[in-house]
Length: 278
Image 1 (cartoon, rainbow, N blue to C red):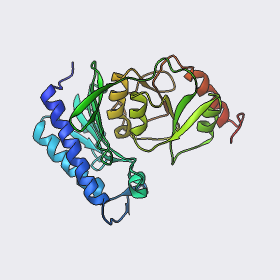
Image 2 (cartoon, helix red, strand yellow):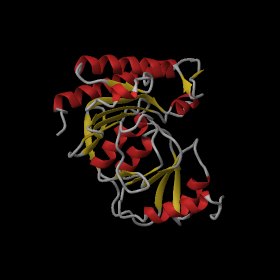
Image 3 (spheres, rainbow, N blue to C red):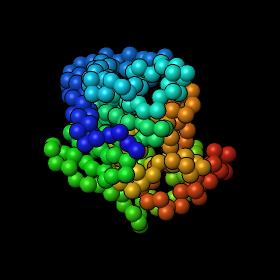
Image 4 (spheres, rainbow, N blue to C red):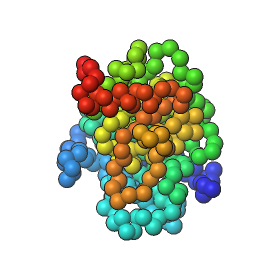
């Protein structure tokens, strides 16, 4: 049973918004771009948001560890013993931040026994905040007003499919080709999951690595809204089960009755060169 209370829920939303303000303070001026060891970009905004979140969560819940993208070098021998911890991406979509297209988020999730049981996703540019607790409803907050959100199910007619701006390979294209008449929507960061959760998108396939902090907060929101984040074998995503912090392939769905397994099989054919690649 989740240890998340209503007061703690609200306090974490405040922290996410404060991190968003720290990001916007950098976004509105000139900033440098550094490179991490894996060649992914890093800015002062990533680190400013990280510090706000780390300080805030440690103040609220000193008993729970925090795993952040910007402080992820925690040995598996230690991390594997955590029954409950915070999983954080201080700035999801740093590439989008650098492009100044507004499509980046702050992600904060609470993980209990390998499941995402609470999630906050905040979009600093628009001020929108999506949040949910496991077993309860999902909401989008604008200002101080919450609106309950639900996925589009049944999803009929033309499906709207989230396609990453930066990641498109043969399997992704074959997956999309197998879906028939679709509308592709390019969108960065965990906003893709949130738009599925609120019913404005339907499907998001992803082949290739993401990290656990990229998906955990938005997964909780999506599931509370009626959707699912599934591995190719149909299992829901779980966290902190392996030494690596990289996720495998996945499909995010608003309507779980959609024939995603057929589309996935087409994607595997595409990877073997049997599907049309546009």
